[in-house]
Amino acid sequence: MTHVTSDLAASDLEAWLDASASHLDTTTDTAASVLPKLADGGLFRLGVPVQWGGNGGHVADAVNAITETSTRSLTAGFVFWGHRTFIEYLLQSPNAALRERLLPDLLAGRRGGATGLSNAMKFLSGIEELSVQSRRSGTALQLDGYLPWVTNLPATGFDVAMAVKGADGAPAFIAALASDDSGLERSPDLDLMAMRGSNTAALKIESVQIGEDRIIHHHAAEWLPKVRPAFLAMQSALSIGLARRALAEATARLRNDRDILSEPVAALTAELSTAETALLEGLGGGRFIEHPASLFRLRIRLAEIAVQAVQFELSASGGRAYLSQPGAGFQRRLREAAFIPVLTPSLIQLKLALRVQELPAAVGATA
Image 1: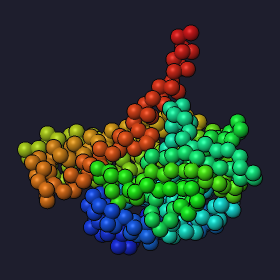
Image 2: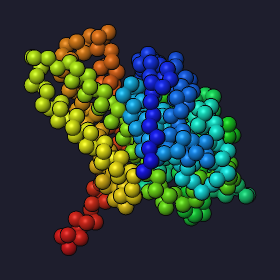
Image 3: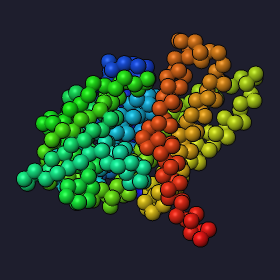
């Protein structure tokens, strides 16, 4: 598997992320700059075939870049995840015309790409029903529904993927809607506790009409398991990046009176490295498609590691972490860590999906 590495320091991106992390977390002031900055660093082209405007390599390269970004700003990493995941949907879509039309602006960061498929991933695991419906309207399809939480919806324009219940008993399908579609309404930015610069809002879909040219895939249940590994692996990169930074901060603050933390911090650092390796190796083959439970477990454990790592940073920092100025970075990471367990699919939803998958095997073993 050929990889193309990313280097945030190759441009001013590294310095910009450091300088902007607090603003991206607490305000919307710099939200419009995230996509252009990441695009200028060439990050959206990682893992995209050269013939489609990318730098080649593998989707694992995008995972690594999201990880690096998230060590400095989880808000930027979150936007990166949503945008690059939408790009991945186009790469794995049989709709070549849609891919050719949308990719140039997405790769250049001129337009946002949003993954509205969190509902679909829960639907695939049997957790909830689809929240967008369709019906025939002449030769077109008319869509209605509501998505309560979608990230990377910049005011400059966006495209969003969503799973739609088929009309007249047809299979559920995946469609792409555009910000200028009549009947698609974006709410004001959600009043988030943190990560406010992520252009996160709700979408109301009311009598939006689309044609075949907007269909990413006609059979959601067939296609979603194939894109789920990339979706969850890139999402897991948020946890890896946050954990990596918190553990580095904890290690740097270990002193004689806190040496008792050295062993557990080192052990968690080693576990993080092992889990990250397992994630990238699994992404390189088809194991996560055939055995999604192994991916669910990694996603769950990486989220738990991130939360634990931030607590280690607190313990290593002591009261300093509670002071506004010297503790500002930690306080941001604490808010970021509070988001990781509820990022859809949440840890509770993933554990429920695992229970549903394992139930048939348990029933068979006791029959």
